[in-house]
Length: 120
Length: 134
Image (tube, rainbow over all chains, first blue to last red; front, side):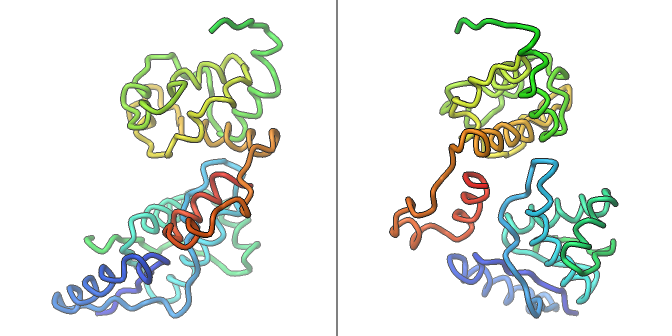
């Protein structure tokens, strides 16, 4: 079984060991973390200002890439998890903002990706 | 602190702007103080979170001078404790946005030392740019 996986910047630099050990644990448990073929920075913060849609563009792109790969997206970094999960929730609940961002990134985010932490 | 209140201040553009950016009703706060009691960064703040929202309610722009809005880590502890459901992290963000945009009180990237740039995790730098610039 393959689960789409978003490493984020930290897992390739400061937390290299975490990436290696998580992948090895996944293998021992009988599944594989399949890195997204292309990905960008998650943005590192979830924008709190109601009018700041631009900061949602980066995490939305990741979710769009993830939905091409499957229904789930695993993360290891707690900040990526936080940002992606909250963006996902907002996109699912707020149709107007979702459509605006879709138009902006010229891709279509549909409902249905589940953002998971590795432990989930 | 002694301040002069006026109805103009209470209904000022400042109050409206904070409410619009944050999407919160400032007067929903009844000053119970649970946010300040639970805030993990309160020890470093010159105004407590509950005092920040009080000043914002009253339209006192001095609130932008407090270090509180910059120390706030948006950890949401106050929001989860608030009996009135006021999303204080969003209010803090609104105040930060106003301080950044209108006061021009923002971080200049060239001021960051090369040491910090090479040693800090990328993640911290990106969140820093998001918080201190616009």
